Image (cartoon, rainbow, N blue to C red; front, side, top):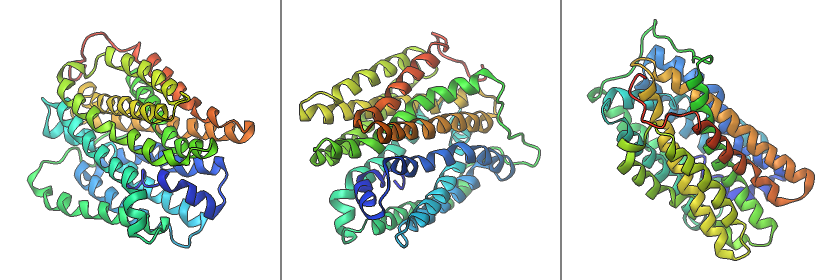
Amino acid sequence: MTILAVPPVLPLIHRDLGLTETGVAALTGLPVVLFAVAAVLGALCIARWGARRTLIAGTLCAALASGLRGVGPSIAMLFVMTFIMGAGIAVTQPAVPSLVDRWFPTRVGLATAVFVNGILVGETLSASLTLPVALPLMHHSWELSFVLWGALVLLTVVPMAGLSSLLPDAAGGPRDPWWPQWKTAKTWQLGLLMGGASSSYFAANAFIPEFLRAIGRPALVGECLTALNVSQLPASLVAALIASRAVGRREPFLIIGVGMLVSQGVFFLPQARGAVIGAGMLGFFFAMALALCLALPPILADRGEVHRLSAGMYAIAYAYSFVAPLIGGAMWDLTAVPAVSFLPIAAGALTILGAAATLPARRFMPGG
C-alpha cells in the first residue's frame, strides 16, 4: 500500500517539490534499494529473534514512516521517511518465505500464491483508489494521502500480534546462520529472476504516469495504473491454481519473459486503448513472476536456511530494481525522449529469459 501510493501523486510531488525525472526515479527506487540492503539485515533479525517478531516490527516501522513522508512538505523529509519506510518493509521480506516453509511445508506454491495475492490487493487499493478516493477524502493533499495509507497498514499489526501465540515461529536462535550464501549459483539465479520482474514493475509504476503526461495523455494515467495493478489479481489466482505444476519449472518463466516484451509493444500502439491493455498485460506477467519466484526459496533451501536464500535473492533482485529504473530516468533526462524510460522493462524481460534458461525442465524437489 505505502509504496504504490506514490505513482498516482507523482505529478503533484513533481509540481510542488520541483523534482527532475532522475529525482522521480530515485524517489520511486529508494524503497527498492533499501529492500536490497536491509534484506540481509532482515535475515539477521530472523536468525536472532524469529521470523514472526521481525515481520511485526518491520510492518510497524513501515506504517509510521509512511505517514510521515509528507511532513513539511520537504524533499528532505520525503526522502528520509521513504528511506525508513523501505528499511521497515525490507526486514520483513525474508520472513514470509521462512514462515511459509514452517506453516505449509507441503503446499509452498499455494501458500505463496495466497501471500502474493495479499500483496497485490494492497497494491491495487492504493494504486487505483489514491486519485478517486484518497485525495478527495484528504482534501486533495498528497501529503495526507500518505497518512491514510500508513494508518491502514498500521492496523494490520494488531491481528498479526494477536495471532502470534497460535502459530509456530521460524528460525530465531543465537547460533542460527544468517549471512546469505553469495557463492552459490541458486542465490544469483533466483535474484536475477526476481530482479528482472521487479525492476520492470517499478519502472512501469514510475514512468507510466510521467510518460503519459509528457505525450499529452494525462487522462490515461489513472486507467493505466489501475490496469497495471488490478490485472495482477487474476494472475495470483492463476498462480495458485497451477502452483503444484508450475513452481520450479523453466517454461512458465520463459512464457513470462516473452509476454513482457509483447506487452510493452502493445503499450506503445498509437491507439489510446493500447496503453491500457499493454499496462494490464504487464501487470499480469509481473504478478505471475513474483508468485513463482517467492515460492522457490522454501523449495530450494533446507529447513532453517530459507531466510538466508530469501535474503540473498531479495538483495540481488532489489539492487537490480533500483539501478535499472534510475538509468531509465537518467536516459530520459539526457535524451529528452520519454520512451527510453521503458528500456528497463525490456531489459528485465531479457534477464528473466536468460536466468530461466538455467532452470531445469522438471520441477525442483524440496531441498534440491
